[in-house]
Image (cartoon, rainbow, N blue to C red):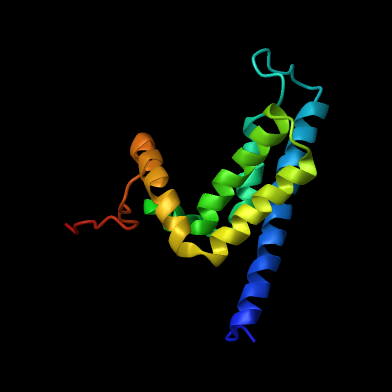
Length: 157
């Protein structure tokens, strides 16, 4: 079924909708959980939660790419994996649109859903637009372009 081009496109659209729902669901759930927390005082510097919703939205969008944990940072090396880039950008865009720009939640969700679907359907233009941005982000964060060895050789005495 997935060898037929039309089936691939339909699956891509459905997958984009599913991942968007995971991203937004994780982000909003985290935001509500932080707002409802009474055990610790809320931040004096940020009127709304930022870190927890972004992290939960990112994890929701990754789909287990970092599992098992022996994978390390392999999924983000050199910005190769579109799903990881989309999982990073989509919660960020959603949070900015809904919390700072006053865009309605459903409109913001539709925007990132269309972003994901178009990115999946048109990989060439997507990579040409996001490639320089990803390179700059990785240069600024010092994420290695090549992985470290996972097994360190030990000399036997």
